[in-house]
Length: 314
Ligand SMILES: O=C(O)CCC(=O)C(=O)O
Ligand SMILES: [Fe+2]
Image (cartoon, rainbow, N blue to C red):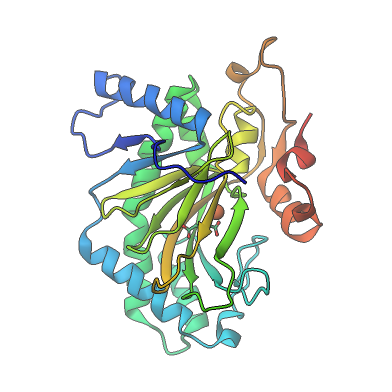
């Protein structure tokens, strides 16, 4: 494992630019930067100002309240989606817990989750999750539109969005104690199509480069990390690299909370014809994202070095 480096910087895309309209010079320039970032790192930092301070406060206090519940209560979260239940109390990653609210932009779905955790309801939690998710999905829509454009497949954006479902995943990394490992979560790629991640003021997220260097991602009030998952890599026929990342818990830091908007695509995904040719032949067979999740979480897929390649690689 190489040492981390401070020199390399993850590309930053400014989504607050008023001139960022399809076809404009700013759009074309940003698309070129996005393409480079996704080929090289599988991620970029998105500067975005549509989430008011109050919403950040309410989502992070909602996360604290959730993880403060008894373990037995948290374990009641079950989901039809493989891997989307409560994760925690795992001996090799003792600092880590996470939970996902399915379909966080749908009021009934957030209410169902809230009532499972708090049988007498919890309005501030329900409102926090529901209101935060809306502007983050808007960022997702804009950012994915640009990603698709930057790979010449903009024609597929609308239908892809229509087939997309979301989960809002909340993470807690408790404070490290003397004998704890520093690894909050080891190097991995997300099993999502895309993850839009927000860390609070406690840093710890690191991105692995192609040459095995680790880059620290500094928390910034106004930005999110756009992280390509395995399903985006496979669907783009390997043009986009799934982002390898990990979380390191530094000594003496308070508990760390982070929030991820996870996306999943329904139906069988075929690589777009624009991304397959003689020089770049097909690398991944058509696949069903939810079947891939089932393979990974329930049928031993975690044992493979690159599960998506094992699942549908040519
Ligand atoms: O907390 C973070 O910053 C990232 C967590 C993560 O990568 C994961 O659990 O998939
Ligand atoms: Fe991750």
